[in-house]
Image (cartoon, rainbow, N blue to C red):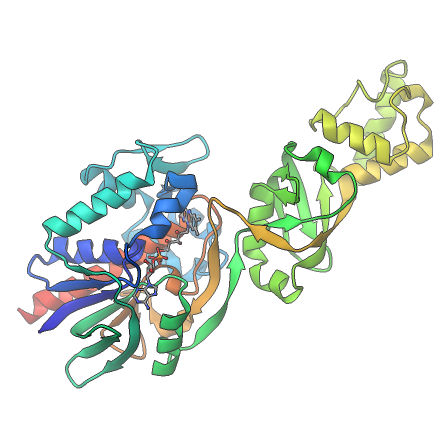
Length: 408
Ligand SMILES: Cc1cc2nc3c(=O)[nH]c(=O)nc-3n(C[C@H](O)[C@H](O)[C@H](O)COP(=O)(O)OP(=O)(O)OC[C@H]3O[C@@H](n4cnc5c(N)ncnc54)[C@H](O)[C@@H]3O)c2cc1C
């Protein structure tokens, strides 16, 4: 038997593509091949078990700015299938969704199981067989069809969709076939720092900081979280995504500069002097002029050699200079990274130059499609990585459906 479509990978992109094709071409003969005993395992653990499905950003031009790799290529596709379409699809298929304050979109049930149940039930009622524990080992093109080889059996297909995420064997198979793979590196990670006294700040959140990596042009802004091992929070995760390749080259050892108050040094010093004039009788430890948490403020005073009892009037120039310097340009030595448990992805994969983004089809091999993390596309945290998977899956399925209709 020759399938209209064999989907390799029973994850987010794989299931979504198979369902889309069936909705657009009911007679399609589809099989999903999944290496694991169960599919959708990343969906299960995603978003801390709640599955951050997408991001409520409805302007494609704005949306692409959240993708360190793939922003140029995704612009057209997001016009065809964006976050609004994702939300509509899940709503229509019984998964009510909600937008949280920070624009992340989750199932109303607050559980990734709602998404898994939706996919499994929809695949069952569309009679799409899922072959579990069936891992792709080889792929090659015969005259009229693709031969998809697994340890268990071989599958013939007119179209093949590769949706194997960041698994290494399928990348190797595609490399052997003739595709170029950009070497994968981790993205979305937190920073390790062994600086003395940092552990006491664990749990402190500074609502808005500017951070930059010395000797690079990498910088970002946003909330910063002190952890018991170093730093996390949106500012750090964004920086880890944009810097995924450069930081890997540096073996995750670099100097991080933090501006806790988003001010330049001169304005900060001016403000400290004004504080000295206006609140001379108050203790520095009780009169903090900045929107930074108390524990951090105390640590900065300590590092500036300003005792708790010191009044603003008694603070000398050296102390204020030092404090100002720490507030606007605190340098931390970063020595490694760790995984951000809520979400992590790979930067790397199929070279985007080899993919036609009108169809998500290989430019080298007609009939071979890609969707999801297998491509050299990744977003920052917030639902963008799943949106990449849904969009690619939808467009690939739509292209196949139009071809199957034409063949009728
Ligand atoms: C802990 C965690 C939390 C996350 N949370 C979020 C989130 O909340 N929001 C968000 O947008 N993104 C999140 N992500 C990222 C998101 O999960 C991925 O970007 C997304 O799952 C990619 O979908 P995919 O279908 O391309 O790959 P996957 O979902 O990884 O699916 C690939 C499938 O292919 C199968 N496979 C691999 N090799 C073979 C083979 N040889 N043969 C057959 N099958 C094979 C795998 O077993 C797997 O089931 C998270 C990631 C992690 C790790």
